[in-house]
Length: 279
Image 1 (tube, rainbow, N blue to C red):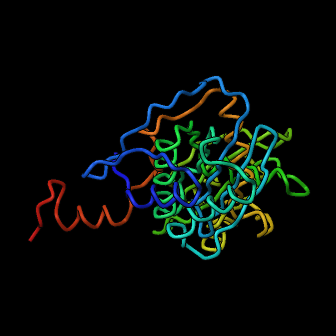
Image 2 (cartoon, helix red, strand yellow; image 1 turned 120 degrees about the vertical axis):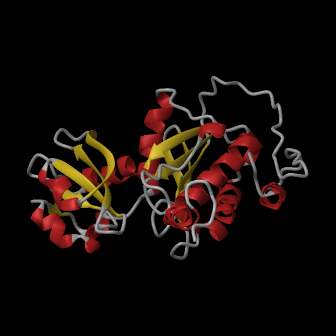
Image 3 (cartoon, one colour; image 1 turned 180 degrees about the vertical axis):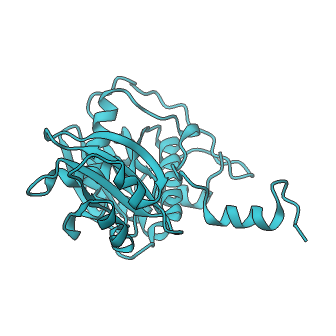
């Protein structure tokens, strides 16, 4: 597993940690064998949300989110995420080596944002021996609908995937819980909504790009305030998964793209599946 060595060392120095893992000449982090109680009941959690245009991060414990901050610019996750976590730790007077868990929104969503969130998560998890909870981004977004008044009975999350398609999933909110009806998928928005039970509402960053298709699919649209990812809801999904013991090893943590990044598709079109340039 490869990491950017200076990124790790800068974080440890700025956060006051004097011991950090060795990194070999190839940039591979050598994990420290730190004595750890795997039954840790008092959690100190970093929460990361970078699936959307504007990212955010938070510190939390078993009771809820303690402090959070929004990254300042659109799609500036790479330069701002680690300093934001560092600042939150300083404000709460938490030492990095007292952290126990890290919850990360894994997608679908912004390809670049997801890569940043997953890379930082893997770096911190290996560096500080943290447990990882991989939170499906659409599940966290669907929790926004629980805070709407009136609360919709059913909900579709809509994220723009370009090419007249969306990343989407459907949820039942009828009894105040949030149960998935249709799993995350790449779909034509009108066709997807047409197969959903009615009534159904829609939210998500993709709404303004697909309003006609959403209307044709028979869905209403929630207020814009509910469209955007919230780090608090990443925490809510994450803590439920953590209590069920659903942790992900760092070596297995990957973004949930659903569709390959456009850059990979262009590369294969240009070079062919074997990597040779097509003339």
